[in-house]
Image (tube, rainbow, N blue to C red; front, side, top):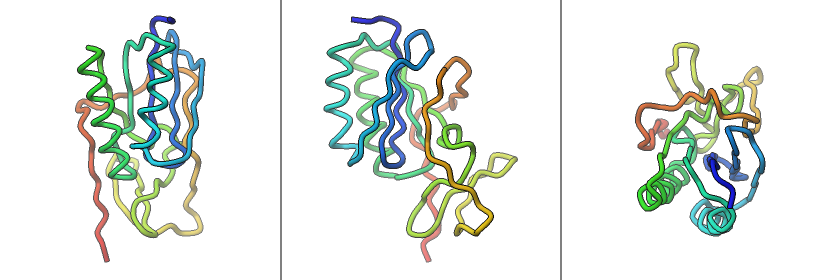
Length: 155
């Protein structure tokens, strides 16, 4: 089993992305379509069979509320049972600060001052796929690991 492995989970959109990091460097990428509740247990069974996990990271906001809740509960349970840290991050770190799907036709946007709002896309708005960073040495983690729910107004 390899030591010093850290795992990053981006479950706020499809496909779910999971990065395996050794000494802070990406060594394996797992990409899987489907529901977080169906995918995470089987993927993590394989990960736990191969690696000794030292830390877990996940995207706690914004995005699919159900995916965020399921990922948090699953990863928090692993964190407690394996006695390893769980750290949370903002999803905008993984799509170059572009819009993130909210609800219906609305998207989350992050302003330069850090405020998150929802609005409809316009032709000037950019969308980028989520990507795993090659290194996690300088990831900015949030102070709180609880899911951050940014609920858009329903019209």
